[in-house]
Length: 279
Ligand SMILES: [Zn+2]
Image (cartoon, rainbow, N blue to C red; front, top):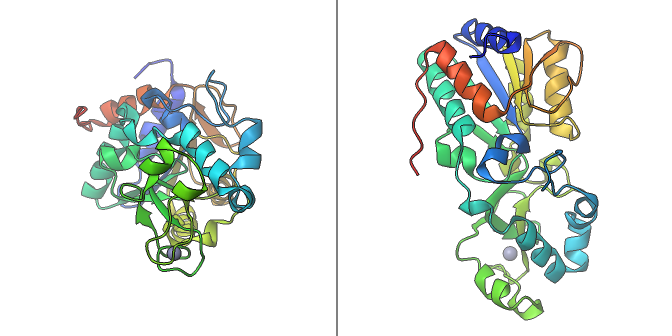
């Protein structure tokens, strides 16, 4: 740990103080940056969350033009599943194990649809914006669609569409024939659209957490606001690890380091071993 970093020291002390409680970690795109995934609203040169996203990442656009919607998604996010976790993801797995061994628990609420937390080994995990490794039927009420159903992306028929994008090759639901869609929360949708987003578990975690840690996330979407407000209302120690962001509110301690440096440093200070990369 850098001795000049009082925020890290405070975070380590706060984590050490809550052996039997819930530690809630809310992650955003910043944690995946070191794995080669551009952020959405960040200042990195490849940040993709610009003008087009709020227009194209919508259910309205999908139903208007499913071919263009699929084409856009694959162009932007088609290689997400090839990415691999970085030391920040692995450090969170180590902290989860450490906290469980002390009789508490650690929950990661990720806004990322990549699979890096799962690949690293996080078990107590909510994918509140959905997941890139699954798709679902666009017909609500179909067993493969909202509010409960989904299908693995592998085998959904996407390869034919990639080769020759068009209406005839759109991936379709094997049960009802409707066009498949991404299993992600779109801009004009709500957190309660699908049970997989586990919104109630997020609210319960935000209410119960003894320490709140935000990693690589801005505070521009609903989930971060809700979780942050819950922490501040209850006066719980609250931290943000992000190299570029200002404190979103008084009472939040900001650690201005990249997550892939700060989280392993926290583990080292706590004496928690982090697994080496498996790839
Ligand atoms: Zn269907």
